[in-house]
Length: 437
Ligand code: HC3
Image 1 (tube, rainbow, N blue to C red):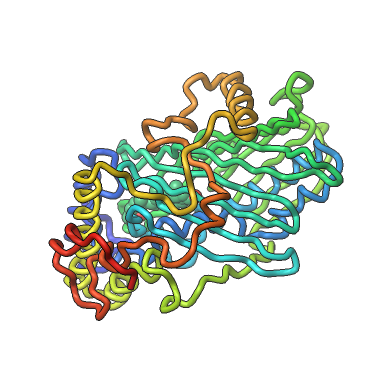
Image 2: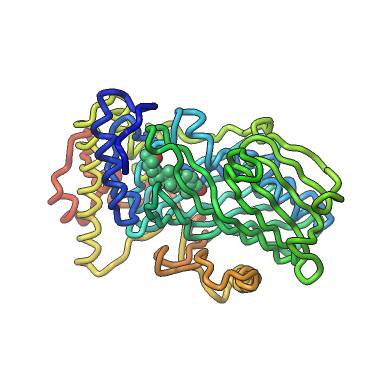
């Protein structure tokens, strides 16, 4: 890896950026193990990223209003394409670069809701595994009877830059108008890589392809070309939507192309004979505001409360305080894991459980997995329980029971006493009846 080439790296950080680049070149694939310089640290934890899926509430609920199954599948594709800008560009646009997010601790929660003309859309995001790191989420709108749930981990490698494979998948379940039979869409997750690393202003580019396969028989495929030789424009893609057994990727009912972060066009048919349906600019789509409880009212396990000291220290540029507060959480978490191991029990997840293969959703899911593998993806990594500590699903019964305080360990899980001072690790590991703070 060559030396830092000017760009966005503050002059006093050139040395640490250079060391960071060197450490990346030899890292083991675990993104959470990277120690990055202060200027590139984000105050936001990865559990918050689940919110990007549904900020465009109008597009999220739209498929539930469409009677025609092919057009419904197109609306799902349109919603998904419109989420990409938020998922993969919003941070670098807002902060000038893709920063290194905080690594969620086991049990960390991010809870919120979008409350707008489409009713309430609730978000639950939970860190269900720490080794390997896995975040699970569920987004539900009861008024429109639609739910998105999923989980993902990341596997990274280095070859000229950071390449990230996402392991996991998302499942969208909705009820077509007038129907009590659910329709399910399995969504695979894109590979990504980091560009512009050497200049200290990294941003994300997507690679390879993803599929959306529906229990109604429709398949969408999105191919990410990036700044390809074809258009020369960043974030380029082409997409095709066809019915299994009737059309094909080359002979689709609908197609789309353009830049997912700028403007793209949906078309009927494909190629020269295609008829334009509409052009979209994701930044024109109204995004709903996510309502999150004020930090002081949050449970100890809720992300913004748990990381508040760390976030404040990052904002102040105080690296000593940042590492102090980070280590405090990490040490307390290690002590908790040790205690669980000694007592031969597992950490209780608040909202998610392992998938039950007998559930109707799992039977549908397995059929959709077959469709994916029939697309020539015999080694699809979207379901690899060994790499994601299982297959995670939202557990409605658990969620009905869930109430604050979510865990009896309370503040001790973060290594804190109720007055904000540091709790000795011995208290964390021996406390049997800890009260939530
Ligand atoms: C790779 C990534 C962490 C993972 C982020 C994921 C895949 C998380 C799930 C979301 O739904 C989508 C998403 C978007 C962005 C992904 C992040 C981009 C960069 C970050 C690395 C851990 C940071 C690498 C450090 C640095 C300094 C190069 O930015």
